[in-house]
Length: 262
Image 1 (cartoon, helix red, strand yellow):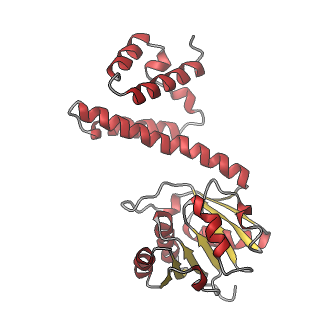
Image 2 (cartoon, rainbow, N blue to C red):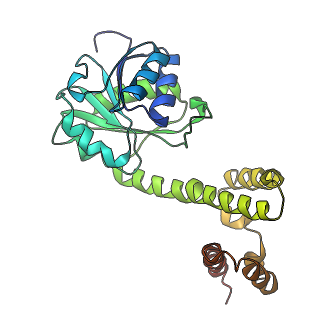
Image 3 (cartoon, rainbow, N blue to C red):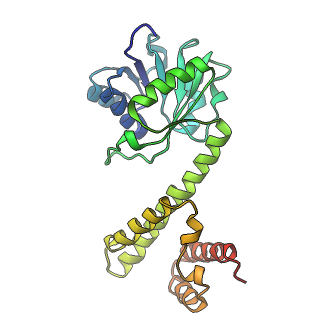
């Protein structure tokens, strides 16, 4: 790099790109260009960052120090194939895509994976978000650590294989849990109750889980107690929702097997 300022090109304008761009910019780095195949999305993010934008991969500036591909997992390979770059440092932000997606196209590449859920409505505090980095050389890792360390106090090196397992764990610990929230909210709605009544329970459950090295020790509920009467009553009340009923049965069975119920 020629200067202390890291010049970044953001390839993508979705939720991850928006929040990551803001964090990098707030930390003193310079986003010199935003790319999105949607001209409107590219312009909206570029205007927010007071920088340039393009909707053409061929027009991506060659002068960046770091190019961050923050697009849907399925689109990464296609975007990489269209990049007019060779020696520049390029990373993606996906948990489930191996680093070698870049290997045939680029000389310098890596991954910078933020372990967090992102939505437009909520601005996360990046300083507490774990960032997992992987790079094609020690020099490239040094750059990633420099960049990541400016926005997060939790930066780790992690291989593609272990990052895939981390992503899988995150799906269970976040995405699937959120689906349970949606079902719980619908059950409450049918009873004329607001989802907010579960807030203290959800917060306390999460607090205890993240403060323990063994969440299994903290499991509660009718399946944990093997309370067959309650389990049957719940199954009957779910008869109008066969999908929820199957989920309830499968999860209860999984809990029961873990605690050695017959």
